[in-house]
Length: 129
Image (cartoon, rainbow, N blue to C red):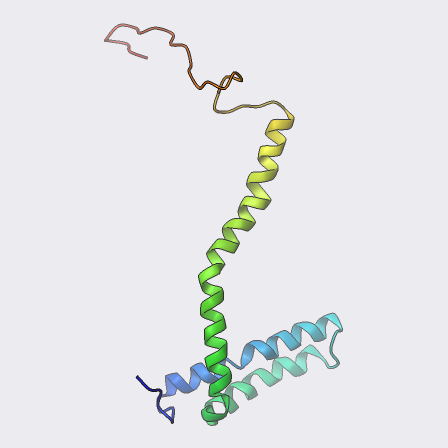
């Protein structure tokens, strides 16, 4: 299946124009931090202009759109893994460290290596627990 030479639908034109906005947003963030010259308001005002230019001239911006879409799909496939890794590193690991520090053992496993727990005996059938 070959790609069409011209982009005809408004949806495709909007997608191509919208893919040009993230670099401008990164420039806006960098200017706010003082890494690039210019006011963040200039970059904020440039975003609709860039979107419009991408919609008016989609053939010029289409190579960037293809690369951006590939990068977005690659990152999206790994985003869930990265989020779960972050939750594990921020919540589970420190909690486990604190529980070991205070000697808490929620599973009640004996320290001899066996997980056998002695039974307390059975009650009557009317009150089994």
